[in-house]
Amino acid sequence: MADRRPVVRAPEAAWRRLGELLQLRRAELGYKRRPEFPREHGINIRLVTDIENAYRPNTFLTPTLREIAQAYQVSYDSVIAVLLGHDNELTPVTPDRLADGPDGWRPPVADRARRDADAPYAAPILDRLLELAGSGVTDPSGAQVFPAAAGDAMAWDGIGARLDIRDRVWFIADLRRRAAGRAPNSGTGATGA
Image (tube, rainbow, N blue to C red; front, side, top):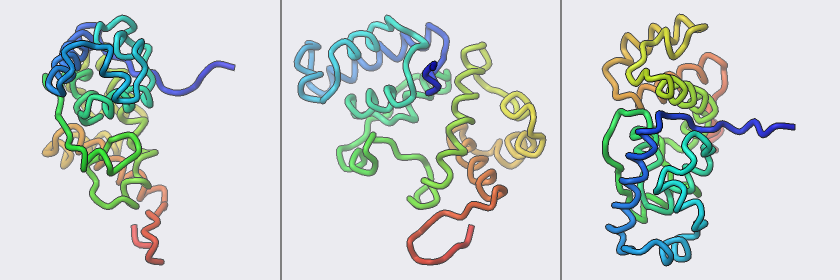
């Protein structure tokens, strides 16, 4: 049976840019030479070599990119933004911010229960954006992102257009979760969505 986990896809130039930025980040963290970095950051040397040199573009799984972001102490969102062509820099994160999640990633939704409830709805949107970026579309319209969901497309192009693309993803994810009738579990007994 084939592995069904999402592979992140982007243009080869974006992978090269990401590799260059990660090399610079490794140097900023005090590792001019590669061999010590993986040992001290809990990441495989081959993975470090492959990502920094863009040896295997379009073969990295989403969880692998989260692991890379954590090792290099940059936000996962900024890794995706570089691959999508929406940003040309990685966003460093402090160790305190890394402690927020096991993979070092913090979506732009502050409430953890709401964020966790929205995450399954955000993931396919992010995957679609990466797919579009791989086809050369880096600033997609709502119809391109949501070809079978006119309401989501209108929200993306309407009120969502005032948000940056990452916040727009979570805005639509939150709307989709609410439409599905799933309330976040806040642990307080409240069920408001």
